[in-house]
Length: 429
Image (cartoon, rainbow, N blue to C red):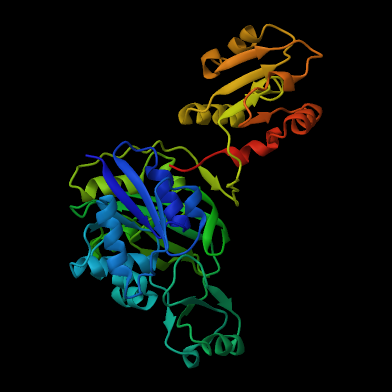
């Protein structure tokens, strides 16, 4: 039975990874909701905005109203604070559906670095910590917010003056030994029987705002595997979780944090074949799952992506062929994606071309079906394309500036060059 899954908050990198992992699944119908305006509206076909924050007194009634109205089966938390708040509400029996989460004790402990380090006190992988500045004999030290996520707010502190300034604010920090080495994330999956079914280590090679934007899967070594098994043996997890490590001055692994949720860069391991969000949902519903790991080397690197909303409305598309639908003797992937998007939406695309050769032979050459187009108008050179555009509620796409200028001036309809097509792509699923 198809599960209606609500991702909250839907505007985080965590939410975007959950969206990427589930958007093609025939077992899931995705919904997103957020408290504020965010990028989620460009991704989620079903999107609700203006939900109170989880610490707002009106949150429970608002989220339950959404659950009831849309028939939501599962809520997938996409932020550490939301994970804790939703898990607490589920434990108190105040939510009208299940939360994709681990037990409250695990979530609560992992939300605090102080609680986490206390929980694993005595384990070799716990970094040496300092209760106060007076306990520190050697600098630098490494400080991280007691409540936080990722590498956000973590910093090297070089001397007592820097530390005193840092601690003078309202933020509470964990002070620990300096960890100058490489940083790693270990993506894990534990099934409902407590078995650690997957643990994949990746090196965080570039970090922006606490998020790994360049991450490489590397071979698992025995020390990290033992740490994963130890954490799993002492904590109770349900589904996907991860932990982060950093090497100290001696090259030994030290724990930064544990989190019982999806990390934003888990797409690295998802593209090995291990879809952690999907596995977690199946396991939560009581299904036994299998795991396939393709095992190849894989590197993720990401930067900002632009998605657009425009006021343009059109019921017909007129499109050129030469150097538009194909480019440098190759199919233009962005353009063909747009053609199929129009097909899915029932918007007719008319190929309007002065192609020198037989247009049908050329379409066959590029394996482009003529049936993709509502019609194909092959006009002779020297003819004016504006004479063949009969639908007023239309747009025109052509690589030629002269053609675009002519159509714009004569017909006063929107005209598009190839670099503008990205603004017409609808990413919502």
